[in-house]
Length: 232
Ligand SMILES: NC(=O)c1ccc[n+]([C@@H]2O[C@H](COP(=O)([O-])OP(=O)(O)OC[C@H]3O[C@@H](n4cnc5c(N)ncnc54)[C@H](OP(=O)(O)O)[C@@H]3O)[C@@H](O)[C@H]2O)c1
Image 1 (spheres, rainbow, N blue to C red):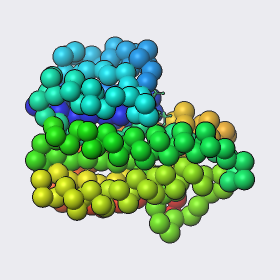
Image 2: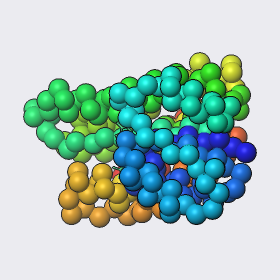
Image 3: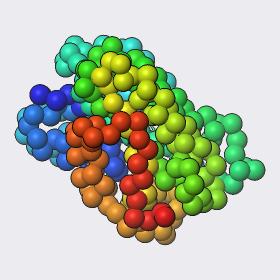
């Protein structure tokens, strides 16, 4: 049985990744987000063995990471895969960003994954894979778009954290990789860029993420990988 933790599982890419990973009866999923109703909706959609799908309403900004880690340990013992997917995006010109915007994005996209990894560390298996979901905007040298100064910087921080942790956690057998996603048609994208049509659905992106999370670390560690057909 593989124990897989996914943050931001209530919608978009995280939800689609959860559905994809639930297809294998050898996977036990811990699905994290704030919106309990949406998580319950997902639970109803994922048919079959309910004791393999555990929903955990939790805020990655303000939640008690130690308690979350304890709850997962009680059920699973250890964790094999952590997908840090929860994210926040406010599209605003640099000069108009207020501290609340800054805090929301940096805390969701960087601080949350940082401390979630730290607190789950004692229950991460040797051989575990941490997958951080970043963005092409946070990939050095990529085309940049106006309005994304905080979002892209926070995703860049997550990418560099990946490289740092791959080195530090190598000695305990934990791999850490980062996927810098191109645009995917989700609520986040619709809200930030009304009228724009992304070339990929969440389901298509989830096929890649699910397979990568289970297998990617057999070949690579500490890498920031562009997964995009939209951004050069
Ligand atoms: N869509 C794209 O084009 C694109 C491109 C590059 C990267 N990404 C990244 O892909 C990831 C998924 O985004 P998406 O497009 O699928 O967006 P989405 O549909 O808006 O999903 C975002 C998820 O994050 C969760 N979340 C947000 N704040 C949270 C918090 N404080 N605590 C716990 N969960 C929280 C939301 O759940 P609740 O509201 O229930 O908490 C939701 O499940 C994000 O990291 C995003 O930056 C997306």
